[in-house]
Image (tube, rainbow over all chains, first blue to last red):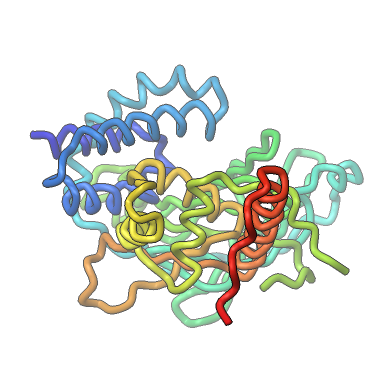
Length: 223
Length: 118
């Protein structure tokens, strides 16, 4: 009973945090609940408040109620086993040449290199970001199953303040990268949802993988 | 050129304890909690919510990184974390800063300096 309550509490956390840490937090709950659950719940509630109020923009608080209802509906899905991300099959594409000069002021534009760790592809990644006449665009290169780097165009690129979000389509999954730019370095989380044949065997939009990534400007030394 | 780590300092107590717990070896979340309790002799207890709030920030800043599981036999829910090179330099800078604070406090409170082992 208390475990289910704690699990519900974790599901009320923002999706990025939940996807990244909820399973491990539940494991710690299992390991420590015998010593008393009050402190765990107090700590969980404090974390919930911090995550919504500090990590996200204030406007997302309004979405929390709706999110909570959606989380409850998706609650059963959490018990389903995770599957591996499908293989990456991108179509190589060239960057558009008409990049605006004001893009240089944003801090996001340029070539970025770093690494990705996920339940699917992992390894070095490269991101090219530029602002053209019609908005932000770019391309992401990630390791494919053949060991080679494969590129895919960015879709639905959103930048607000220090926050960045974009989507990249693979053959059987949509990968959503969310993160932020801090101290000249971008980092964040990845969530993948099933499409195509993977979606046929599970509800469309089901999360099938997650991971973390970071990027620094190409040419920067970092140890 | 000397690296400017001042934007990262001072570390919060939770972040400092997490970095200290990871200074010796990579650990999973529960291992970090246990190590923090051991290092502080039970005086500082880190809950999982506080731990992962801080781990998320530290990972976003590139101070802590996730590493692959130690073995396939490991509980799949366990994830391991380690200090990055940047994290180690920040921890060293924070320790140096705290040493300065302690030195200053001893001077003002007229406390004797600790004896060095000979």
